[in-house]
Length: 519
Image 1: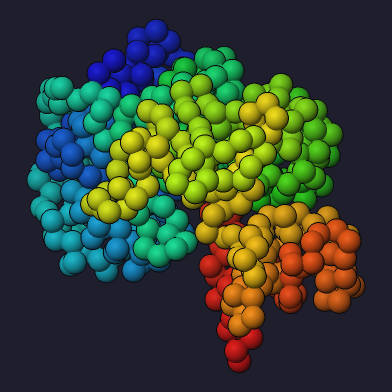
Image 2 (image 1 turned 180 degrees about the horizontal axis):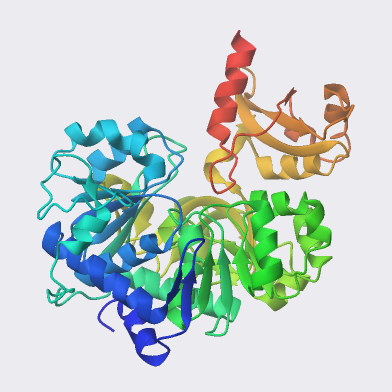
């Protein structure tokens, strides 16, 4: 296999009429998808002059064009840069400055977000995906927004749609991390990483060509793109693709279109459980729900299990494509306390001081090694050297192994609170808070303290109508956790700030609480 775009060509030969992608506007067979990839590859190569190593950025909701453009880049040896559609203009400007794409393809929903950036990126084609064809023979570079359909029609169907010698070692994706600790970094994933990630997913989900995958998470994130969507195209399955997550539409499609697999982060699974339709929707087609991105609360797992659906936990990061550790469906039924075992094509270590491997039960840094790990951070050799040591990627997370080698994720290393020389893991305190009647959700962060260095503080979202007060919450820790772990203060919020994948943005919580305290 020279590159991953050959997946689609092969399925187009074997099963040309099988549905590959169903989005909310179109249905594409594998033959249709192969044609779309070929057309986009010709347009990129001959009209936009995109070659090996050039970057192509995309800003838009989930859709079949996202997929066809990514595979077209793979065919040419170019690099696809999906942009988070929840960012603001200065953040897009930073990424465009960092990645220097040859072209930026945008759907109309987001034109206004980047319209003012054209002057600062004169060497980049700004292309509007659904612009009307103007009839111009040769669109001019950056004169105005260029029509996506016009650009595709401007290239000769007889032109070549590939570049020779594009192999699995070629970079194909730059996915920008969430930037919770500063400016985002572009994780570079090569085609080999996506191939082995697909093999890991196939093993995790027992995925095959008879499966139907429901994708509701945004594909600009590896969770939406790589946990099931691209692996489904590797095995020749069918994808139902939602533009963005809508809980009512998700349950409607589960009922009527009967997918066998889907990925839901805890926040989106919670949204489904909150609907009255959750109890009446026919969920019998679902073999399992895959969840991760943050620690999966026990009550979500139990709620899904009550409808006969196991929740398979997966652990990984953007930098691991992301599948690194997972449960099979069988393990998910009895081992909800753990995240699982190293993926089929991954190695994992738990290390302490000096990189020494730790015994089962000891908390340390989670390290991952495998062909699915990033090759580098784009244009950032210092960050690359810091993250990778002889192929081992330091996830920045803390965890331990249980008695038979299953991973239990304890916390983010950066979230650990050191108080009076003792390590405090916020996840332990959060688990206690989330068990209290009247608490909807909670987070714990560290706050500077003159005596102890840091002390934990709790930020709590109450169930509507709850009468819980701060003193009751603080007293609830008595006899439950060691005294040094108790929060020093409790703050109430209407909701916790989260990123698009449902992770609580603790850096925002720290800033908010600090501002309130110092006013």
